[in-house]
Image (cartoon, rainbow, N blue to C red; front, side):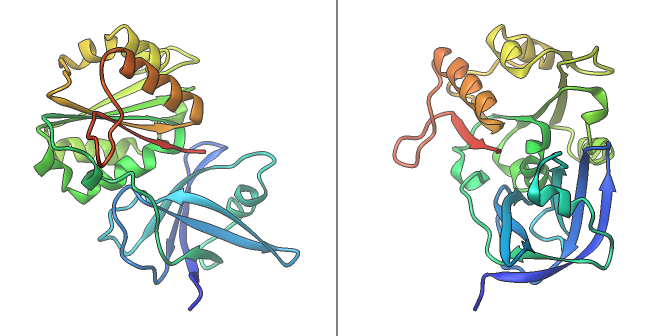
Length: 246
């Protein structure tokens, strides 16, 4: 049986002229929050495919993906044109280990993301298991502009439902309407992020999940390692778990 199945587009939500969410329905295998699958289209008898993380909780019948319409992107340009009722191909089986069952139990969980990499965290928060594993969860979203802060209604609803969730936006190219100005890396390096949240992470009390472009992941990991934290591995548990979102 082919791992590719047809998905019907249910909706397309545009947040800005470049950021949009694609919602489809398809017969896919069960997945874990934080995992990714692939979407694809055929062009000139060639399959153009790319990996995207699920934004929805695994229990939801609506499969949601948060995308950026890249100007020269072969696939994103095609996905951006899709309308309700159109079809796109999706991999039936999900992949990836950026999941909560790979994270050691702790008091604090810091979910650090940039751009569309907030997607897998929203899936985890919607799933609900995270609240049994951690006392405090901080969702940090780094973007260039205030307009890039998508999913505000969903985040507000999650905060109302789960008081232990704290949300911090970090805007780099203009003064923020809320949250912090600058980059996540600098706010971790000088600990202004922790001060802003009124939390004191330690090696024994905190776990960090880092998801974003390769440079962000590399720089954030290096800063945390300089502070004495270590990479989390199955055979050697630590405090830093990463996913390159590129």
